[in-house]
Length: 150
Image (cartoon, rainbow, N blue to C red; front, side, top):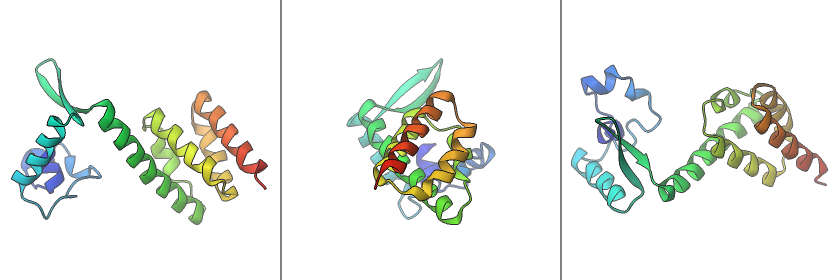
């Protein structure tokens, strides 16, 4: 199923489950399905992905090493969306972040803090209003660091 998603398959099951809405859908549209499956198998063999079972249902999950890579990649993608929102003064991505893994969110906040761009403050203020107290405290720290930069 993962290979079909990455290929961009119009398979009935893929469309029925709305897997065509996945951001990675069609990413490897120019590759053969067999080649995509080979790369997935390689990722399992190299322990970037693992197969775990929920009852009888097999699930493909990241290993710790695979997750470390994906976490950084995903954080960078969301950071770029954050940058666009700041540029357009329209904090859209903050509403997506509610469903995002906490470690990814913390990494995004680290990147914003490292960047130190004061233009992020209005988006951070809006985000702080809808996020948990723990993330809200981190947002306050990031804002303080940005404001204190000369």
